Image (tube, rainbow over all chains, first blue to last red):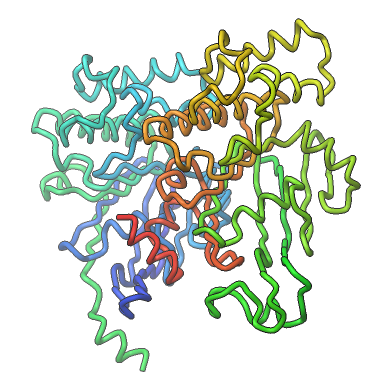
Length: 241
Length: 276
């Protein structure tokens, strides 16, 4: 396991410019953090502090306004994710960086086990084998077997969340971004997820996570980074002027 | 990763053109008609790369130039300027400097185009199977039994009943016609597919099935595709990267989730906001 951080976020800021309304919405401001192999860094802070924005910035769903996001690849290259070529980002998403959000984006026509198997199929694994691994993971997450063959579109929040987690887990990324992975789970399932996260840590997988419950941060986090809501627009404008 | 296509500064003007055409048109002028000479700047400075197995979305409203760009690449239209290279089996083809015969050979063998209007992609005077046979013959398959069996395989792959192989396309529903069109372009196993508004105007359930088919083909064959559409849903579902066009210009490009969740250009922001 490498001792240097797999991810370093340096002075990352993100604001949204809404041209139609002529508004600038600050979201994350001057964020610094590090994530290490086999360890979990937790992002905490009040609503509006820009926690999810940081995760989306790392995944490049959001473009950065300023700052650097340095990722150490499996080949030990350091890449600034804010600047990297789009194809490079797509490759990293496929092979090295996983993201589990609170929301499930899946085709309404796909069976749950296929939704979960998809990241493996995309990497070139054959469908039967990928589905096998998907089933094992769904079993680990305590999702009833009768649901595996149907689409997750009609599932409850907690069930959808487990499908989402399962999809992230099968792909075994080197860096795992987790946005409230247990938000809508019952205590028993939450315990299972915690155990799975512990296993991931033991396997050397690095994680950056936002947890809904403070006690989970207490239990799981090796590092805690607290974000404050960004300074108001008025102040930003004053600074620019 | 293998590069399949590289397009550099592709432009297309309809009309005589003048030195002011590019300066006085585009999103900032809210027009693609040159005020000096009246020419239409359908596309200007379109550049992008496409890799194996990748689906690139080109999004924009009608008249934005998205179809023009693709038609130039498929040799349906001649570009006014720019270059494009196609890479296949270790060879590089400069699309716009080849002669017509070479271009035809490439579009028949290595490219596939699926049109919104099946009348453009299919010959309506011959059967569904005949349409596929036509494409196979162009690519030098000329054994009757082999053509028959390949056509059957392609039609079942695209979920058209092989029993209907000898019917004319006009007997098929719109969704079925699209499937036959797709079966036809797949006949030569092309590494590059162009899909121009292929689901526009179809029933939602039929749209969904066609989109699923496209994704399956991408996964099975690692086909590179360019998907032209005005439908954000289609882009979201199919494309890994997206170009947004307006008045002939690419105003924004990026990873599809980024373009949809963090659009930078005023126009894209409006487009995304109106879809929600």
